[in-house]
Length: 280
Ligand code: G3H
Ligand code: ZN
Image 1 (cartoon, rainbow, N blue to C red):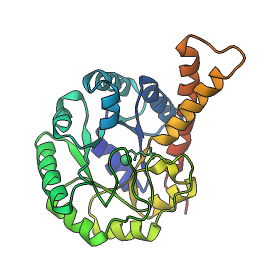
Image 2 (image 1 turned 90 degrees about the vertical axis):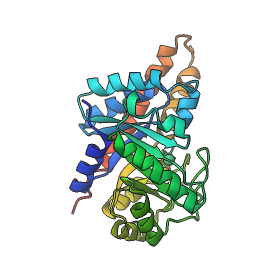
Image 3 (image 1 turned 120 degrees about the vertical axis):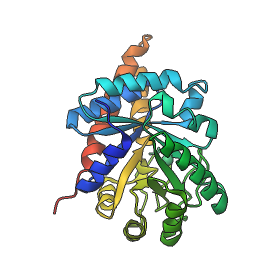
């Protein structure tokens, strides 16, 4: 069933839970994410990044249409989110392609430029009933990572949200994109400070590199939307590799894509339970 990202995030924030958001590259990712969410009966956000749109030959509509159908047929609430959009022309395709939300990423621009571009993006989004996430922190580009030493300043974050009118804020608190090991050390005190100064839900990017216990700590300290991508790809590619390394490597791609889909569903089901409200 369809829900908006704003509704899923607001419900999670009210309940003290995390809202899991997972990056889609192929159709099998989306099917697996929903299967994992259905298995543990949790809402889920399907994210398509600007980079993934590039992989799909720069066309957002075919994959977005497939995601819409998968979301509508799901037995749990599912929203569609366009992620890490730096290109305004792609942003402007959000509204009529089935997405209820977008992350507009001007984080690599100087502060005042980030504010001006994000304020314009938020105004555009709100006129169309879309929920807009933005990012503040000296972070690398879409292909890069939150530089490990960089942190979002709580006072600047407060001013940034007031100046831009965004609905959620991605912050640099110690995680890095594309980590294939889970050893990121999050600054939980900083998350707690940001929670006090920032009046909108906080978003953790690069969550694949964060161990389960630190994810629970992040949520207990005020993080709400939690984005995963690489963890799914590790499972997906590992499963394909295992099947193809077997004694009779198949030719039919369904044989290895089925294994990939099952492996991704297992990871999603696990991570969604990690995001539950911490006991006590
Ligand atoms: O926006 C997407 C997330 O930040 C994914 O990061 O691939 O490191 O989990 P990750
Ligand atoms: Zn990200």
